[in-house]
Amino acid sequence: MNDEPQGATGKSRRRKHGIYDSPTGAKLYNLWGRLTESRAHTRALEAARLAPGESVLEVAVGTGQLFFRLRQVERLKRCIGVELAPGMLDQARRRLARTPHPQGALCRADARHLPFPAQTFDLILNTYMLDLLSEGEIHEVLTEFRRTLRPGGRLILLVMAKQNWLVQGMWMWAYAHCPTLVGGCRPVALDDFFAMAGWRIESREQISQNGFRSEMVVARIR
Image (cartoon, rainbow, N blue to C red; front, side, top):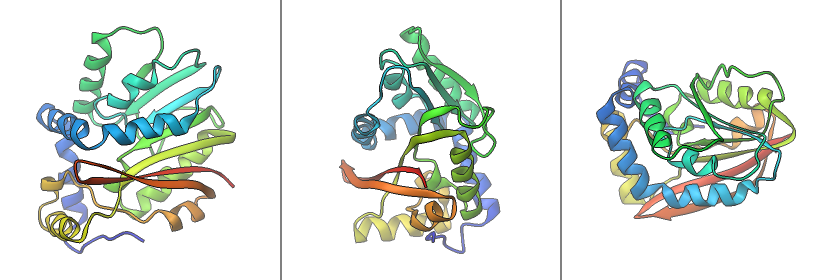
């Protein structure tokens, strides 16, 4: 299901995730996001088709680039963002503090164990997180998303897509030998994970920005 090289051991996975805990790592990710992910963020917001009175959760807000825009959607009932990495969460809070807004709350939480009751949200947004996780963690996260989403609610994911053959080859070599060089990310094939966790994929599309390809997946509970 995943293109997971033998070199990406549990030890290296922990090490690559650690880069997001530091202020420097968060700043580098912020720059990368502006260069390669902002167009996909725009498409995700368009696909969300948010309506007044809806409750929205963004899981893994990173430095808050998408959440900053999400909280400006008018008349949402609830707009919450969660992030596990302290360095990322600090950057997101700083970003939001520069432009105060009555809507939007941030907290630290693990995507596998969200601190919310069942059937709380109408929409869950999650960007560029599943491509960091192991197969077991992906299943845990999708199961937890299913628990916290209301009947009829939707899930919008952005992940790293498979790149052109040259970039893909170099990327996977780096991922296998030094994951920190590529932020610990690699393309993931999600279809089997969605099926096992009880999701139905409604639509998917690829978005390219400065040569980097992202995939957007819109899904609902089966």
